[in-house]
Length: 200
View (cartoon, rainbow, N blue to C red):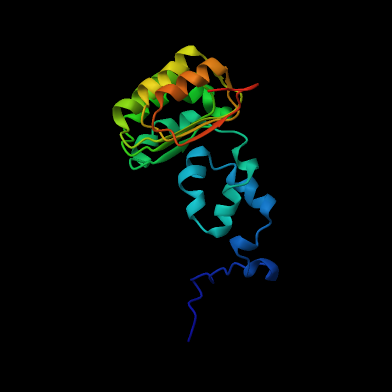
């Protein structure tokens, strides 16, 4: 077949033989972590884990979660996860999220488990759960959060039907802990870091 002299030949992209057959799963993990950390918090939450198995494993690497931009995700949380059942806010992002969470809870009617990174604004959060989350049964307070009298009174008042309570790392007095136990008649499991001998 005669070629047209006026048409330039198509350029063929040549790849080094070592790269021609490369796959994502073969990429060095550190390199992949470097890529993933540049894609943003929103992508890390709702895109990257679902690309492939190797990306899912990388999304679990602690290096990917060293910087979290809560402003990037808070506006989309209610629309991304309307059927949300479990939610964990680690201490690293709690300062920003504690005042947004009460507004979001109304959208999560199926919420059953909540683990908080601190006790800041906890009463407002529990009020929202009491109003909107009828199946809620598990509460956990992470880190060394202080559970004062007001928060201790709110737990049995607003969540009397919860079955599981994890206060293992929380700073709570024996008096406050007793108050919670007296009010939570349906409690079946308690993990507490209460100092000293707690007698009930």
